[in-house]
Length: 119
Image 1: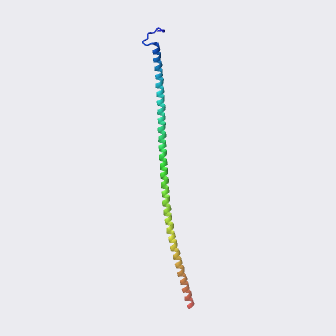
Image 2: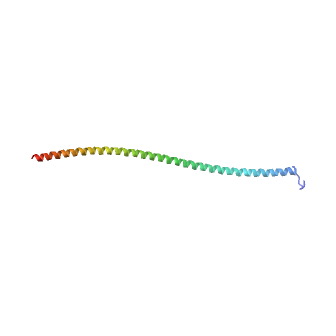
Image 3: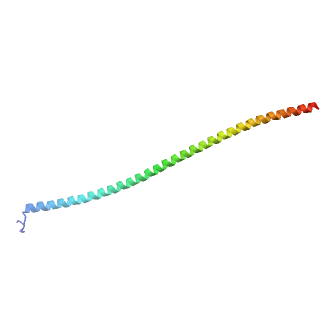
């Protein structure tokens, strides 16, 4: 050839082969870089999924805690309502007993007054 080299292939075919080899290397390098980027993206998405799952569990726990607190307050309110009803009944009994005792006192005072006037 023009460079005084012995060639098996024609110089044009050899140049095309070399160019194809370089393009293949560039393609393989780009593919490897793409795989690295995709791998890091997948890792990042996995981390975000784990973080989202963790936050979801925290939210579920908080919601359950809120429900249990609401149930506790409802139960406490019912207990207090029952206690109020019981105290109202007790107050009514005491009021009736007081009125009865006042009548008895008035009767006894009247009896004492009549007894004193008889003497």
